[in-house]
Length: 250
Image (cartoon, rainbow, N blue to C red):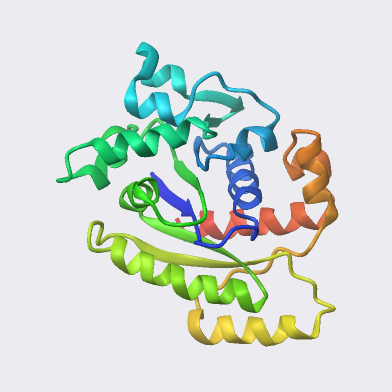
């Protein structure tokens, strides 16, 4: 089973779009996928058009006497969701109250699916850096980092690399495996310059870009993945290509 965190410290770069559509594509190919929404905005459920009654908060804390299996919501065939949302504010408080020794690995200790049950764990991470972010990076093995091709986003990537370095002290197996350019406009002169910068520093980790595509945002309004909403769209083609690369690496 592979554990992939879709993460970077900057918001607005397409993390949820990437996590949801990648998870959905892998599930559609017969792989069993658990998508974990670790953002207080709880956008993954909205993107999938579902309203899970429980989520990651109940899964970790057992609040309300909820069994862990009850917190895992079947969103699509082969695709399951541990929802995020505002309860994660309380979850972060709860994590902060746990004994200091080992609290960064609480998620890893409780989220242990059998290898024959799941093929992929995909984490949709919030921007920023807190106790929940640390828990996710201590549970994941791989990081996929979406990067918008603009100066501020590239600066955010540099900052995130420092976070990854800190997380590796707790989880030496963690590695940044994929850099994914998102919202790419090939007509923009700076696009090629930014791509060259990324290739220079991350050659071998750099993925084919996700082109800017209005249908990706339209799909959210209908609670559908890009493959359900417009399977011929550029966004569907790009995320299908990303899924193929990740599967081939596995």
